[in-house]
Structure formats: structure tokens, C-alpha cells
Image (cartoon, rainbow, N blue to C red; front, side):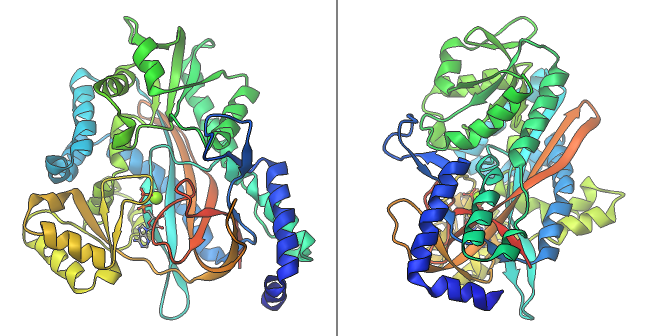
Length: 475
Ligand code: ADP
Ligand code: MG
């Protein structure tokens, strides 16, 4: 395999031809995005960036990531139902981070008023890198879990056929047959459909709450179309639409544009900049208070913060969530990297000293999502020196830096030169669950996502223009 592979990789004319074949295959399969200049028009589209070849991933580690997913679903759900835990875990963070504090206030208001809907819909994606061990094997380490607007479940349902085709054209029939099927779009839609059914109104719609700029619309369209296939109506609305036309009736049913909304699927609202005005916050609160099923609801949103991730890694915390299931605790904990508090006090001081002594071994993370917010290397020292004596530092957590084994590949992206690169990959696993009251009516692992980036970038996802879509080739 490897030698043939290398031969293919080194032949530049062949690579150029394969890249052209690949781009056409991506377009034919609908692995597409709108272009940056006109993100709200489908008149011009291009292929979503992807790797020319799939990336080898050890089978055992891949299966481990799939196997732990339903436990992660359960964990997120349990956290979302534990206000005391959330309060304690986030106390220091919300004292200094305005965005998290604002979300937390909504959470508290909902608790005071009582939740109006007992149906919970969770769609998440747990992301991992494979940390290289000294003996040459690799271990699965979680980067983070996304409980809000985890993307690329749609496009990643179509990338397997692109890589299969490229490999066949490259004469690698055997490899092409080893690309796994993947269909997160169907699984995510299945859970949304379940929540809609339980809501129990034929007329009510699924509302995708979408961004202003809709460059990645096709990723969402796959999920919408899966719902339409089941004759479930979906609409796409922005915060502004909810501000202008959203209302609750006496039973707290949510209406937007005259339509009753059964499920709000948030694909926007995880960044401070998404809340452009007080009205936007009012709209979020309106949706949270409503009878509509929220994906995620405010407490599940908070369960996905990096601070919660750090607190979960403390001794004894997982045991509290799974008191009678030591194997589950062990399975989840095996995926944790080192995570350290920056709260005021001796423990936080120790974290500061440790980071300053070896900044290249850590990542400093604020409570933000969407890529490009983390701090690495010498910048960690600059930032920490500036705030090490102040409570400001409590807005961050520190994490061990994961060192995956690099692989070589070509990243196909519009306007980018075709060049062999050293790459690092991140494996995502999609989870979906639906709970009604105390009954988990669905809890599934619904697919995966491999994203690969050039190793010169420490941060950034596909939407940020850094990573590209990929597929695992199990070895
Ligand atoms: P975001 O919410 O912005 O996606 P992440 O925690 O996923 O934040 O970090 C963004 C990117 O930074 C990841 O996709 C990964 O490439 C890199 N990264 C994050 N944590 C680590 C880590 N512990 N080790 C190595 N790289 C990391
Ligand atoms: Mg991430």
C-alpha cells in the first residue's frame, strides 16, 4: 500500500489530473459551498475544501471513539440536568466572562420559571486528535465536545464517494473499497424528526436558526432534505426574523412568521458577535422560554463550555455522574487530555507556573467556539504574564497540547496551489439523543467527520479556511 501510495503522490502530472478528477467528483456529489464573496446566493458555488487522499487512522482508536459516543451523549444530558453542578463549575468563569455570564443568566431565568418543554434534543460532535505515544502507537484524546451547531454532518455524508472515486482512478481499487460509509445527515435528521413527532403537531415546523452569512448552507440542506423526505416541514430563519415576527401564545407555543415551531435547531448563536443587539438576546430568551424543543437548550449549551470540560477532568467528577458504572467512567476518562484550572488560588497558580515553564506543551483556551480563539506557544507567556495576578485568567483553561503523527497529503481548496503538505487530522464523532422527561427515547452515534489541516496551523476549522474535509482509511 504505502509504496504504491508514495508513487502516486510523487508523480506531479498524475496528481494534477487526480485533483481535477477529485474536484469534479466533489461537485457531482454535492460536496459544495457558496463562495466567500456571495455567501447568500447559490448562483456561484465551489467544492468544499477536501484532501486529495484519505488519511490512515488506526482502526482500534477509531472504534474506541465511536464506542464512547453514546456515553458522551448521556454525560452531556446529565450535566444539562444538574443546575448545581453547572453553577459550581461555571462560577469563576461567569465572574469574568461576559458572554458565558449572559448565557448563564438565561439558564437561571429558565430554572426560576420552570422548563416549559420536557423533550430534549441533543446533537453533538466530540472531536479528537490521536496523541502520538513514545512506543509509536497513538491514543485518542478529546479536543472538545460541541453541543451547539456542530457542522459538516451534511457534507461528510457525501465525501466517501469522492475519495472512493479518486482512489479508483489512481488505480487503488482495494483502498477505495475500504473507505467507510458515513451518513451523519440521516442520523441527525432522525433525531430531529423524533423530537418533532414527540412534540405532536402535524402543522408545526422545524426552524433552522441560521447565520447572516450562509456560505455553508448545503451542509444544512442535507439535513433539511432528510426531514422533507419524511414530510416534515422545515424553515430557515435568522435572529432578526425572530425579533420581528416571533411570539409565544398562552401555552408558550412559539410562532415565527405565523408558523408554529416544534423544534428550534440553532446553527447560529454560539459567538458573542452573533448577538448584535439587545433584541437578539431577547429573541434567544423568547425561544428558550417557549414550548419548542431547543437544540440545544440553554443548559446543554452551557454543558459544552470548555470550563465544564476542564471541571469534568477533576478527580471524582465523572464518578458522580456515573456512580454505578465504573467502566463508563473509565471509557470516558481514557479520552481526556490533561486539563488545568486557572481559578484564583494555589492550584491556578501552579497551572500558570507550569504553562510559563513549557508553553509549547499547552494550549490556552478562552470560553469561545468557532476556531481561531486559542493561544499557543510564546503567546501563552505574553498573555499569562499580563493577567496572572488578576481574575481575568479565570476566563481561560489550560490544556495539554496533543501531538498527532503528521501525514502527507494535498489540500484541495479554491485558489490554493497544489502542494504536498505535512498534515494533522482531527476526528469528530456525531452523537444524537432525544429524551422525554426521564426517558431516553434515542441515544445514538450517527457518524463521523475527519478534518485535516496543514501542520503549520495550530488552530482553525473548515469554515475558518484552515482545515479541509477528509475520510479515515482504517489501518
Ligand atoms: P473551537 O471551539 O474554537 O473549535 P477547539 O478546542 O476545538 O476550539 O480548538 C480549535 C482547534 O485548535 C482544534 O480544531 C485543534 O486544531 C486545535 N487544538 C485545540 N486544542 C488542542 C490541543 N489540546 N492540542 C492540539 N491542538 C489543539
Ligand atoms: Mg473545535
